[in-house]
Image (cartoon, rainbow, N blue to C red; front, top):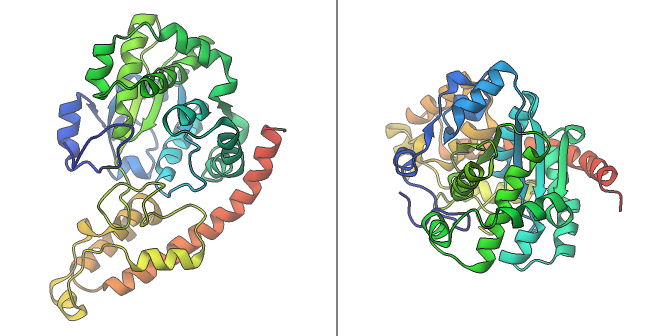
Length: 356
């Protein structure tokens, strides 16, 4: 289904999303069921999920539901692909979802060996402000640390006997103690909003996180919870195009990159052009193989007509790679400058939310 393993700990890019939908038993995404679809939805980057009819019903009938995502505070940088997650969470928040963001400090300690103190420092300094700056309403979002939420840790212990070791292996492949503990904790995170009121939930995730959703739904079924749903979006590739954008890959864009870092990274990006400018003018380029067009489609060009025109001009050789890179740099620099202003404001909001 991909170049390697697709699980919560892999960096591989899937090769065929249609095969994944069938192979994983996912529901195909139908944009018609979602009111005022956002850019990722209407351009096909949201492609599947679980329990989508239930979420569509809640959205259209204005019934109670919740949305949840997490922060893994293992690095002091956040890659640009994270914006996809927050775009989806923001969409559901604007449509009435109770919104939760967990800081997975216990999971970071168990699987990445990052202690709780360091996790807290990174989350408060970088991660939470970035999430707010990307569009979350801080006043309407419930942020919490796993290590400080007794409801989550208590629920994790209660749910730990609801799945067998063989079932775990069938879902995740490996059954290492640290990963088992982290996964059960993920289930508790996903289900704990229902401790106050039983209602549907939706978790926006890349397909690599689907094992957590499968385990959560299996355990929810045996424990009297409403089955949580998920919505899957395609990964934003790294600028080199070979793996998904991540915190550790040298060709990834980061949310606080400065102008010079952006220019250098864009200049090295994989393009869909020809070997020479003359050849590209004659034969045109292939936007489907161009990583800058991935950025345009998913995040940087909001107007559908503008995007389509740029793709057509690139195919006809009217736009050269050098011009495309210059345009991408311009858009990214503008985005990052605006983002940094929002980030500074969000740091003050974070300080109020978590008074030390």
